[in-house]
Amino acid sequence: MRKAAADPAIEARRNGAIPDEVDPALQALVEEIIGKVADKWTMLVLETLEEHGTQRFTQLARQVTGISQKMLTQTLRQMERDGLVRRTVHPVIPPHVDYALTPLGAGLSAAFCGVWIWAETHREDIRQAREAFDATQAGAATRASR
Image 1 (cartoon, rainbow, N blue to C red):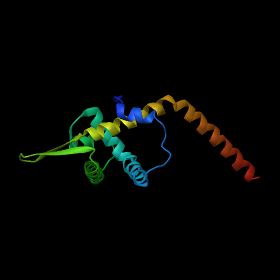
Image 2: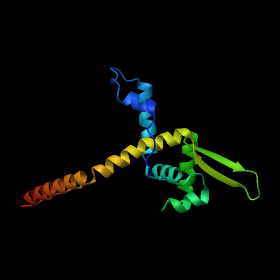
Image 3: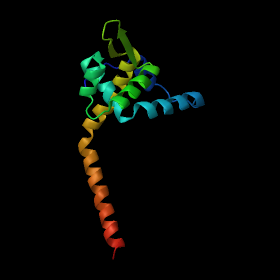
Image 4: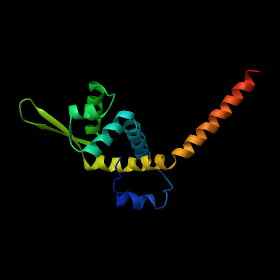
């Protein structure tokens, strides 16, 4: 994933004070957005459009390995509804439709770039934690079977 530029407004808020109260409507929106965009296909489509720019449906289908036409259609439709992608229909025969990230989608891509960098930075820590956990679980299973 390409490193995207940080949004100064978001960085200023991130470094500011944590609010005492959380707006329930905002919390619901955040939970809804995370539920939608944190799925595998949305993340992969977002990454593909960020890295390759405007793409036709067939190009996206080739780039996003393993996605069905139905799932790609549903994912793009939801991303368009949320304002993350722009769908452009060119009036030619046969119709030419392409998809591009909107500024909102590019901003989300930048936010997820931070997750990518975090995972890359902590890959070894995560591997060690998983090995330690698995060893503990294996030991507990062995003791339980005696």
